[in-house]
Each structure stands twice: as C-alpha cells, then as structure tokens.
Image (cartoon, rainbow, N blue to C red):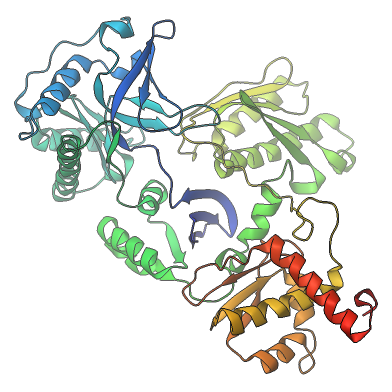
Length: 544
C-alpha cells in the first residue's frame, strides 16, 4: 500500500491529507490563528463552583468559561495544588518537584468545594477544544507529549502502550525508563518507542522536562488568564501523531513549512528525510493529487460507494446518525439476505473511513440494513472492529441491537470536520438575481486590467473554475487567454482550481498571498461598467 502525505499551506489555514493508494483516508485542517487547542497549558483562575455538577467554571480567556470536573483534577491534586501555590508565591525561584514528597491522593468521591475556591489560580491543560456553545474542557493532570514518550508531573508510574505486544520489549522499556526517569514524574511509553535506544529516549525526556520548566517559568511572570505553553508548530504537532515510516512521499506547497517538516523528520526518522518534497507547480496541490474532487464527493450529506449503495450522514448536538441504503444494488442479487450482508460490509468500510475523515466523535448510531441470520450480524460486528482497528482515536463498538442499530462511541477532542460541499452563487450572493454569465469574461479582463495597471501587480496567478479555464484557453491562436496576454502583457497566468464555484475566481500574488478584490462590490461595478460601455457603443450587452 502506497501512503502519501499532502500538506496544503494557505494564508489562514493548513490542511493535511493522508492518501492510501491515492484514496483520501484522513484530512486535518488547522487554523494558523487558532487558540485554545488541545495540549495548550494556561495559568487560569477559578470563576465559580457548581456543586450540583461537582465541577468548576474556569476563566482561561475564552469567551465561554472552561469546564473543570472534579474527576479531571487527578488523584494527586493535593500535591499539585501545594506545588502551584509555592510556584506563584515565589516569583524568583522555581521549586524542584523532584525534591518534594507527594501528599496522599484525594478522595475520588469527594466534592469540588473541598479542594477548590473561587479566585484560586491553577495550571490547567485543554483536553477538548471549544465545541458549539461549550467552552474548552480542562484538566489539572498535565501531560507533555513527545514522539516516543508522554511526561506527566505529579505521578510516579511507568506505563507502556498496549500495542507493544512483546513482553520482553515491554520489560526492557520499563526498566530503561525507570533508570532515567526523574522522581515524581510519570511516563507513558508510546508505540513508536518500540526498539528505540536509551540515548534517543533520554534526549526526548530531557526535551520534555525543558518544556515543563519553561512553562513554570512563564507562569511566574504572567497574570491569569494567560497561555504558558503551546506546541512549537501546529503542523509538527499534526505530523507527530500521524507520521509513519511507511510514508513514501510528503509533499508541501510552502518552502518554510517544508523545512520545518524536513527538520522534524530528520530528528525522528533520519532515513526518511528525503521523502519530504516541496511542491512548486502553479496548479493547486490538492487538485494535482485528486484530493479536491474526493473532498467534494466525501463530505456531503449523502456518500455513495460501490454498486449504487450509499449512506446518509446526519449530525446533531447529541450524536451522529448514519443510515445505510442499498440503492439500486438490491437488483443485483435474488438472495435478499446475502445482498444485505454484502452492502452492510461495504458500508462498514466506508463508515470507518468517514469517521476518520470527518473526525467524528461522541456517539455514532448506524442503521444497517436488517439481517435475519445471527451469523451475518456477528460477521458485520467483527468486520467493523477489524476496519476500525487502525483508527488512532479511542473507540468502543457495540454489537447490533434487535432493531439492527450499531452504536459506536469515539473519542472527541475537537469539533467534527464539517466541509460544505454545496456552492453558493458567487454572482448573486444569495439575492436570487445574477448578472449575465456571458459577461463573466469581461469581468475577468477588467480585473486583470485593474491588477496590472492600477495595483501594479506582476507575476500573479488568477484561479478560475476548470470549465471557465477551458473556455478562456479554447483555440491555440484565437483564445481569449492569448488575446489578453497580448494586450495586457505576460505578467500573469490563469490556472484551473477545482475548489472554486462556476463563476468564482481568486488571485494569488507572486508572494503566494491572496489579493482581496471585494467580490460583491467589484462584480456589481464591473457589470455596470460593461453595460455603460455597451450603451456608449449603442449595443445591448445581452445580445453580444
């Protein structure tokens, strides 16, 4: 199986697509200006206690107060609270956690009012991003994640990933880390640590300890609420969780991000450094690798798969509902039971892909086609567990109920990826009236004229819908594209972009920054100018 990672860097966000045999299986979008991301550590202040919920609302600077439940305080909260109090009381000295004696664990059935008070300052970590009307979800059990290890202050345990099956290797890692681990710090050994030498693990452990110390030093200098630790680069964070040495290629369309990824890969897998390649072609990188088309076909309400069968995905605040339909597939076999099993198995494949692709979390209810035979119901259950085995998110799958429903819970740490595949009209902007589409080429020429002669732009690229691009470039010697370049100069290119609507366009300057042309105003003014020109010529623009 060929695995490729495609990174699309835009001015406002970074998209990371994972392809397996050219098929899109995972898509992550990270805003370049995002705040309150999972893993960030804040110095926060308790705003109010909610005894009925056994929780507290905490101010981290977000418009909605963050939520901290009693169970998210951790068993070592007494030690944590004492340490944070010392840290904030003495601004000149960072107390050494290694030299402290940990206090007894708190009662897991205790009350929030017994351990917290309004106005109290805490070091908290975001475990769930703000979702819908809810603020971030917090924990005081701080953890710092690396490639091989997870460092946890106020803990003294060593845990090894269950995915490391070898008992000998598990024992080796446990003994190795036990010899280098600082006192009062716990460690979770990740699957990627399997087979690694002590020098590599020790280097990463020191780096994580440095991150912890830097966060403490910053907490002493700021006033709550304030961010005290965030990942060095969100793209590196995203790559850390999905990177595999099985990747054949990593393509990136930005030189700076390419270098960041290459440096990171050089550290964690030096032998794979050369697979990171910069993409420099003018064609959008997602169009080049067929990702745009797959996104538009995979993120709608209805998703088709083999032989005419399809699934319908509906999402609510409480849960996600998926309905499986055979479509015209039912005509392919006279045996209804066998046909239902086949459709359900193929639907399970697509549903497992959709859960990863959309990063759907929480409760998922699937209405499969009814099957009478118990062995078929069991086969479907076993198959769903098999196809979801590679899903990195924690999940739990229940067998089919009497009503033919399968229930899945899947870890949710951020909002589900919701991409609107329908296209709004770029000409009327929802008003219900559009300018004559025949005049769109006149609008494009006026935009080019404006960019070149008024804004003095050079070497820019105008992206249009592929159909419009084909029309403009029709005819080798008589094309509009050739005519415009003759009249206006050759300091621009027109390229197709599958992500655009039919009468939509965008312009990227020579520095790869998008030029805001104030679409709605400009479209109206351009149409007015065209009509005025036609009026002055004594012609009707609709007759041209």
